[in-house]
Image (cartoon, rainbow, N blue to C red):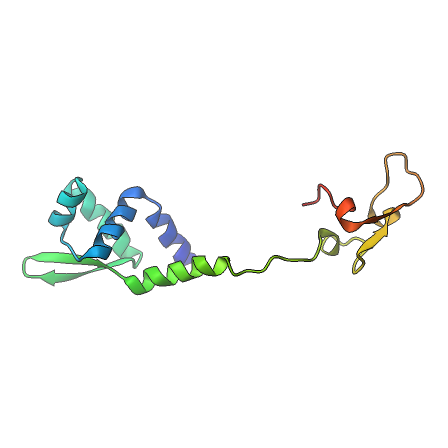
Length: 136
């Protein structure tokens, strides 16, 4: 999981993100990437080095030049991990069940369980959501 967080941090840099997007269309060498992105070859090389260190890009020697390509499998794994966040169901338990209140398991409780009104008057029944305003 830590590796994925690092990869996301690496991709959050605008030039590296643009490099990956460009390389998704076709494998390219440093010189071609430099021309397409209008940044220096040394800057492209440095960004590619970081992308490669984090497993997002690999390279293949073709004659004199190294051509770089995106590791689509790893990029897809990151994408699936992010997408899976949208599938997490919200917790329907209210906060009173987690805060150690005496009203555990009830949908309502007396104010003496965890709440006193400002005048410390006798307990009044109220719902957990009324009690828990401000806990969240």
